[in-house]
Length: 108
Image (cartoon, rainbow, N blue to C red):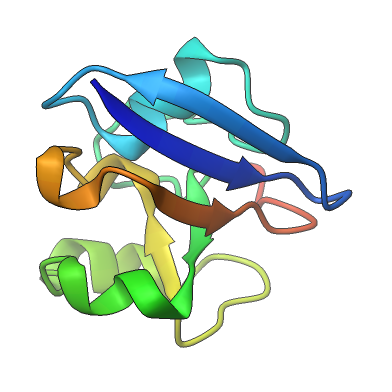
């Protein structure tokens, strides 16, 4: 199991346990994290799993590939630390990951 802390738009932390190999989006949906919608089901096409990865975790992630970068051009309130939760696969190296959910998500 992998522990992930989601900071919801109100600032409240939600610490959850996710299965090794799940995506960040799957963990958020499973645990009903406020603000993560995951409308496309992880197809990297809607951007409704947009989140901000804490600065000290960014170097541990694989860099975003072209489809994710393209989808990120359409999210609201994009920042340099913006990522799509559907593109982050959880494992031991990400145990303790902290992400913040944006104030709003784009509706597809």
